[in-house]
Length: 87
Ligand SMILES: [Zn+2]
Image 1 (cartoon, helix red, strand yellow):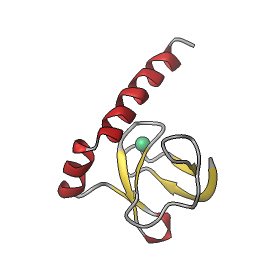
Image 2: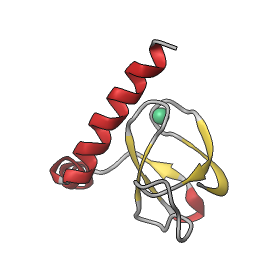
Image 3: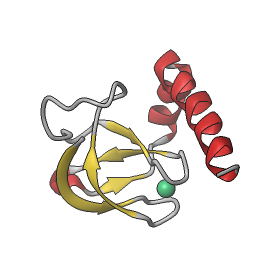
Image 4: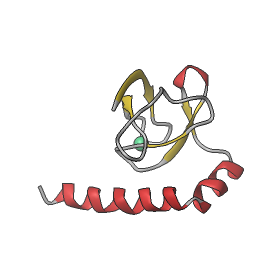
């Protein structure tokens, strides 16, 4: 996890100040155009300049939906969220 400037999820409006890749590592801060998954609501958003996040365009959403890593991340998030409810 890498500390980044706080940015707000455009869907649930939770603020986050950390980012990592899908394996929990980070080589560099997110770049404009990088997609990210909110660890609170599980929705995907896209970084703009200054690490502001926006909802994906229809074309970006279609590309995300077709990406196996995104589909796996959604499944992993759903399982993790369910486990959180039982603690
Ligand atoms: Zn969110």
